[in-house]
Image 1: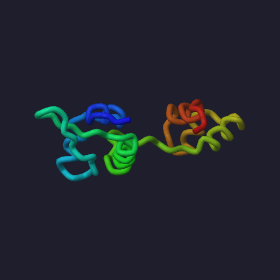
Image 2 (image 1 turned 180 degrees about the vertical axis):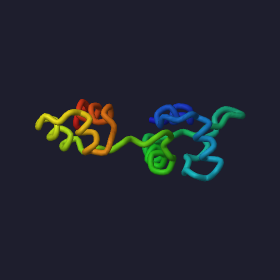
Image 3 (image 1 turned 180 degrees about the horizontal axis):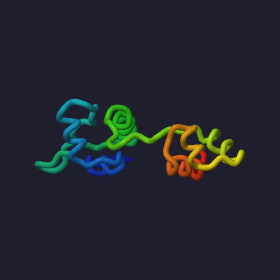
Image 4 (image 1 turned 90 degrees about the vertical axis):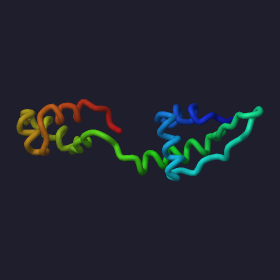
Length: 109
């Protein structure tokens, strides 16, 4: 099964123009242009092409925003089981109270 550049971009989770920019800048390997009709041409992306670009995107395109705070959920659970208040738990783990509560409430990965 093959996909157009716009469909490939949608499957990767980026805008079509981002893929066009990466192609222009030589950052990714691209499938060759295929001619159709008298003046038409397109790139037909396979699932392997899409997964390769998706892996490149995850590895080399920086994530925007503040990084997530990593906390020791087991330690939070242990302190809460011992009856420690949230303020003490947060200070022991090195985060704020809402982050400690959210970490304990979140499902395990």
